[in-house]
Length: 194
Image 1 (cartoon, rainbow, N blue to C red):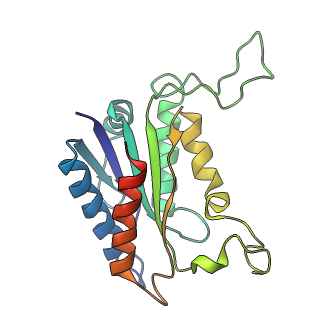
Image 2: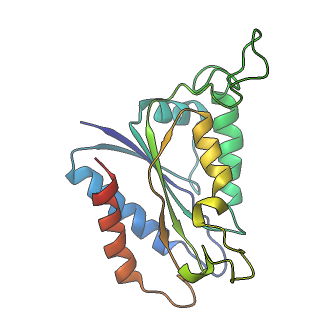
Image 3: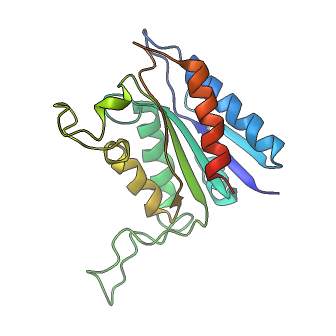
């Protein structure tokens, strides 16, 4: 049996209650339970205990992070979570500081991670797929979805987590295609979770 820690990073906004993110979390739970995983969950809108969250990260073989794209990043509630959990785990529980040593203080910055797990980010975004990876699109100027999420990828890498391909549900407010998003989500999990 493998262990998966699912984090729902959504927070409610006047224009978004979080139904799609919650639905993707439910689909992930169902998928992983049918594959024999033991599942633990944290939702940003619920209370959590810092030490229990650190234990979930240490316990997990896979961390699955579901989030809306919010002002080109994660929600402020997940940023707060990172500040609390990652900062508390940084000096021993989840990493050996920043990875450098006194004998080599200029090498291996960010490589002190102690976790031996994979992670996957799943994102809901109002941006259309065509807004990314195209230098002719003026706003993103050709950057990819993962370029936009680079700070998150680096945060996870800091703790030694290995990246799995990112899932994106595009154009979810202006031109939603939710049934197709769900189908692509299942295909994405089947293809990338071993």
